Image: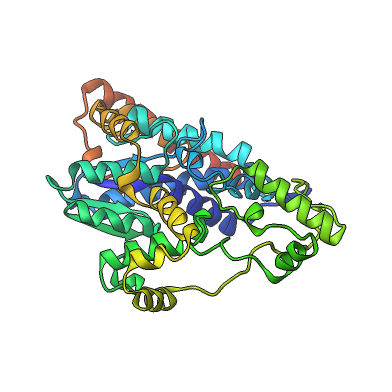
Length: 391
């Protein structure tokens, strides 16, 4: 089974298409029509190449994010991947036009290809990958196609290989400079994941000198202000606003989504500490064990438990796991030779047909043969006519 992270393929192909086509910009945004067709072609090409190159692992399962509802991890930590939407809104790419076009490609694959396409309410494509690996890795070999290092943890479920289309290399603990999978998991939980906006266990636990000075000026009890990221956004915002207005007499940082909105640079409430793998190892050695170090600061323990839920596959809710497995098992896709090729011809993606994977082969009925013969002849004469017009 090949578990394909579709989101990664999609974004890689979008940026590849923009780099190749170099679309015009109007009012700071790319003209979608100029690069979207090539994006769709690249997505199909990448998926078909994966199936050809890794056919020994079986058929592809396309793993999708669900954007219809709030991701379940936001119930654990509201800032999880919080800047993604704002980034898209400020991007020169008109994602509101691009996404429907890419959805049309997925719809074709769902209707006419032999691939299963799996997603679940409130879950990410990563959840789909990890849940299916957990369910099937003991009975068959699994290949995960994803550049996300989080997928390394699926190796503990059985015969799992991890490959990145971005680097065109296999991903292992060694390539991530770890001695073992257990070490990698420990580091990933404690050091967080900047890409997903998962903070380190030590982040937001020590007040900055500026904030300490403010507390002294206000003659405030530090326990009144002690809080961590388990607190609500409202309480956190109230504290920040009180600090900034009282101490600096300045407005809170501008949260406007406007592209050129001015931002006031303000001091941080928390101290930004240097804390990496080597520091972590020293702290554990100093305190005698991981548990002792975590207990040295009540915030560490809370943040550690939070990060385990955000990072580790074993904390994916059971209802999501069951839904993903049921979604997978209830699908019985069948390759529709005629309709798939019709889509390819209509979009001028003809050269994709030259290297269709083996699971796309199908016996032609007489009706199919006559249809293809007529279609190919039509295209042949169309090309001749275009050539004649040019001459």
